[in-house]
Image 1 (tube, helix red, strand yellow):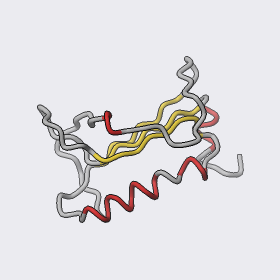
Image 2 (cartoon, one colour):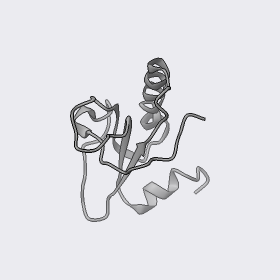
Image 3 (tube, one colour):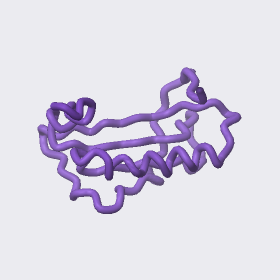
Image 4 (spheres, one colour):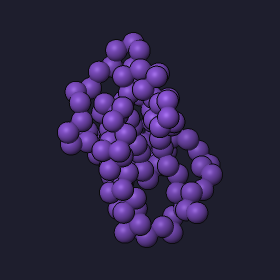
Length: 107
């Protein structure tokens, strides 16, 4: 497995993240749920493995209809006071129910 325990938790550079094509317009109402995943990885992961992961992750909105807005991307390597996470993923769901139903296809 390529994942490692992070030594420090630092916010990723989100400027490289763009909405998934075909996603619904972003609704940030009080009931909406934004799910954020920051992946800390081992340094020796080959770039092609990272790119393949990002490509596969970008397919999730086509498989999970409850996702209203979705972004995934690699860190741009910009200067930062703390190290960034190499991969960041965000998903916006209409409400708690839509977020939870994605875990159980039988709900």
